[in-house]
Image (tube, rainbow, N blue to C red; front, side, top):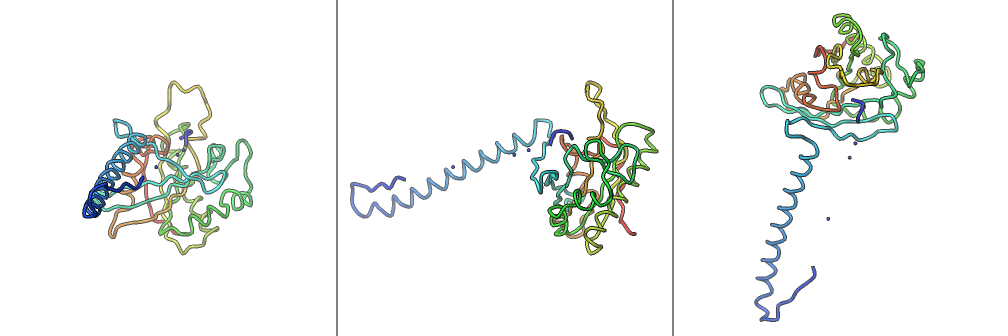
Length: 245
């Protein structure tokens, strides 16, 4: 999670005039064929960058501002119905204060409630989330501590995130919570003891959804096998619930 990135000359025949239309048609067909080949090659090249041989994907991010990364993903539920999401993540110097369910920090400094509303939930983020068909507030915890306690903490963080977002946007957009629980895939070879990247601030916007889609199933499939998003396999839970105040 600490690693979040990014184409005639006009020829005339020396022969008779009747060759012109024929050559024009042939030329057009050749051009269409060439464009098709290059498009296919380009798509294969894109997939080769985006996905390795095991099927693990690296999702390319876009930015809403200097501290907000947006990862577009899509997945299907067990019936094959599709949903498209934007996973909105603050950059790695922002995240939950270790052990807290109500405070965020920038680097080592805790943010005030006003700073959360003005800096974290900045105008670009409000505008981007405000056009969603649904919102999912995510809570998660880093690898320290008992799994059961950290899962509880993840649930409380998800609820707190939903509250902050609704304070900023109002209650017109349907809201869910997603508790991913505790991080359970620590890197034994990692020298960095800072685990703040395991507990980022995340909100997911539902962009498109087929009728009848089980959003939680489609989201779980979309987030799986990703190298730079919190894949469900690296956390202890995947508890999805409708949020109500």
